[in-house]
Amino acid sequence: MNRIVFLLVLYSFSVVVGLAQQIGLNVGKHLPQQGDTLLLVEISHLPFAISTGADCVWDFSNMITDSIELDTYYYSVAHDSMRITQHLMHTHHLYELEVDTLWYVGLENASISINYTRKRKALVFPFAFGDSLVCEFLGIGKYTHKKTYPIVGKSRVCAEAWGKLILPNLTLDTTLLIRSTHTYKNHLEDTTSHLMENIFQWYHPSYRYPVFEVAHKYIDYQSSNPTIAYAFYHIPTDDSIWSNDSEDIPTTNGKEITFVEIDSILTDIRFYPNPVHDNLTITYRQKQPAEVFFSIHYNDGFCVYQSPIRSQGEGDYSEYIPMSTMPIGAYVVYIHVDDKVVSSSILKH
Image 1 (cartoon, rainbow, N blue to C red):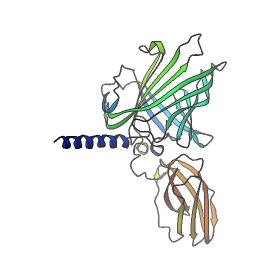
Image 2 (image 1 turned 180 degrees about the vertical axis):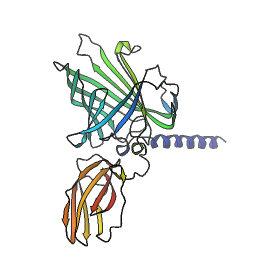
Image 3 (image 1 turned 90 degrees about the vertical axis):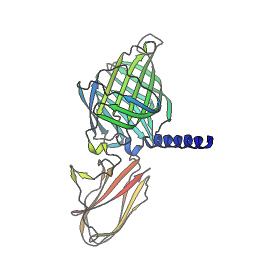
Image 4 (image 1 turned 135 degrees about the vertical axis):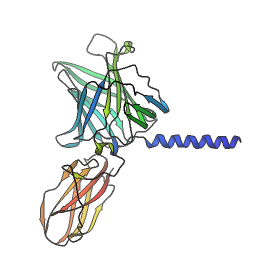
């Protein structure tokens, strides 16, 4: 009998661990994307009880959400797919992706600007329940764009819980809670105090961005009385962002691309290596004259590369596409031949 109980406990533990691993974040599904716009609702900060651990239940269904609606949007810097800027509440937040690490590199608004000379780790992909990362960061800040002061601090990011999230009109059975704690030495005042920032974000496996976020900032001796406190309810309104687990339908200007029979023009098409790290090679045989060009789209449909349109005759061809600077993740490569299109899925590692 004891053996049966032990086996049942072991089985239950393996199911729990398996479920926790399934709700981890990965770069293909959870890296912020240029061009995305999210609708947020800023709500009054309440003394939320936030439990941690496995199989939690967070019930925020009684939140009042008829307050201020905000937009946050993401865009690239100089068309560099590895540098992403988030605009939120009149502030630009700057990020960079290096291999599997998303770095927070600075911010700017009308009052202050910060440039991190030793960048702060925001996330390392993949990131699952129980994972954590700790780093120290340094930088230079400017207050009212006149007074310069040093930035010194420590950061800890931890995936410290998973469970069910209940929001108004939305219940998600499997969400991952990530807590980010940042401590800054206060150089703006003559004091030995520290500025503290706690951010709680709930992620769902099929949604690129956190669906709920609670944050508060305070001086270390005033933890019970935050100087700044806010919460955001992220409303999933974009089906292409929400459906990360489904097979995305490629679109151009919002219209579905129709794949037409292409064998009459191109044959022996090969894409390699796959997965790719540096350069993607495409080889094919062209049977008749046609106009040809290539494009690469990230897994949400955002175009990250397009070659010039060329008029080509019969023959064997090779196309080389540089991908070393593109983010890790899933891509779709299109070959456009006159009015026909062929595609292939490619992984970048």
